[in-house]
Length: 273
Image (cartoon, rainbow, N blue to C red; front, top):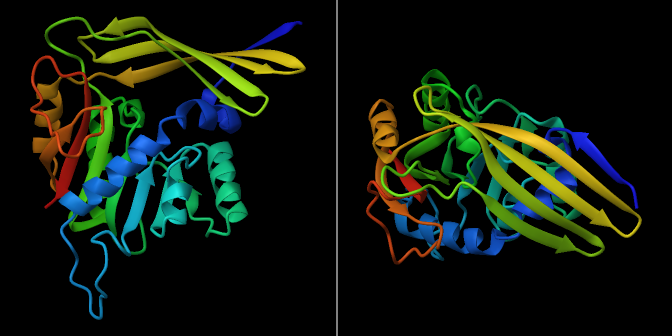
């Protein structure tokens, strides 16, 4: 069988992207529900009915991609919306929402320059998308936009990889996912790093297998690096946000962590002031 190789943008292949990055959705979903219940300050709403603390929450996902979490949150009864720069990913997201009888609530926008009609209760961004913002100016613009989109007392659950100051970083990853007759093997490894300018480039390869074809997609991710001190310094410069709590990628709401020089995988709970 001939293998076709493409130098492409993985976000332009939403079916493949959704499969390979959606495998752990259940653990993330459970954690986010627990985080909303634990960390979101309830809004004072007239005529609010008693029920679980998260009932009626409005959720926003910047850089939502294919909406792997949005549609599941919406199916669970949350009012969800998302935004992303990639039109193909947004189209995929909205079609899946519509297929499940849900509002097509995702739209094309830049996470450093967007507005919403009314504030949301919480936001989430859990798989390193935040690190696509390559400069401090862009990062501060993102936090400013999100600060205007989330009400006081709300939270932003932000998950990404820090650069540990001790020990070796876990730079190379391999994982696989299957859906029906479609299987994808993924390999990500560092191409080069520039600590001074805080730029890291990673090769990302999808090996796609179907009964009648095999396809290889090669991409390069360009990400901004953060030590825990650099991230804390960044948050201190924002107008709207403070660090409330942190967790690791075990997604255990009962076991917050203390971020230090050895921390690599982290989900920060940022509180809207």
